[in-house]
Image (cartoon, rainbow, N blue to C red):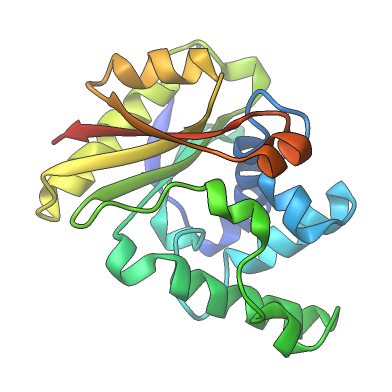
Length: 213
């Protein structure tokens, strides 16, 4: 196996991070949340997400929140970790609006007209938790322990920043992901189900897992 280096993401990782975010959103289903929200082609979704990672406003999908695992050939895996008080959904909504304005797809007032219905099944962040998000690996590098290393590192970052608990959300039915996180001490907290979510995504909803740091 090639040598794997773990580092902080930089702005030049935008294209890889767009792939990572879209892929993580798909998980074991074929159509992820971002594809439902944007309702665009895969290429257009990737272009949107690449811009989203580079906005002036920091938020949970900003490059500064991500760790990258790479070989000499380039990035192969990654994940995000953030403080929802400073980088949560209000900041994300502002950033999304800026990307829509930059692309000129529709007026800003439509972007700020309220969260898309599909997001109602995304579990909220518990107060005082370090939130882990958007975990994905290139197919050729899966099941090699890379995500384990990334999880250990991002959890250490949370501890260093004073958090005592971490949270991660998965699609209900994504058993491999649940088992992988349980190996790191996560435990199921609750589920957020919605028939509309199941119709659009193919999963009944999302589950929230927590872990003491």
